[in-house]
Length: 106
Image 1 (cartoon, rainbow, N blue to C red):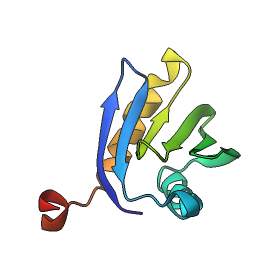
Image 2: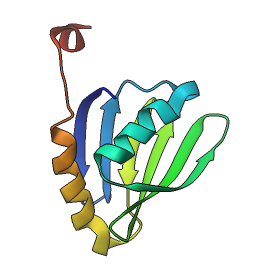
Image 3: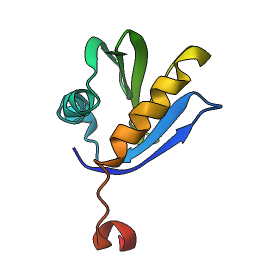
């Protein structure tokens, strides 16, 4: 699991994650991410260009999304009462962010 950045947006109730994700092998990214966040995987949904997994963190539902065409990955919650959970998870993600010179200069 290689994370490049994670940006917490409390107003959008989300964390936008920049990472190296292979759409066809999404579980190789998502399962370690869920484990790193101490989340239980409750449900896995996917379509032609999107993955959406329902995770559980200590009783709070957290959605993990990935859209292929936009190459965008994010975590979200449905309820404003769970925004604090996202804030906590964003802190956990920081220890997994790795940026190299190649990442900076392409």
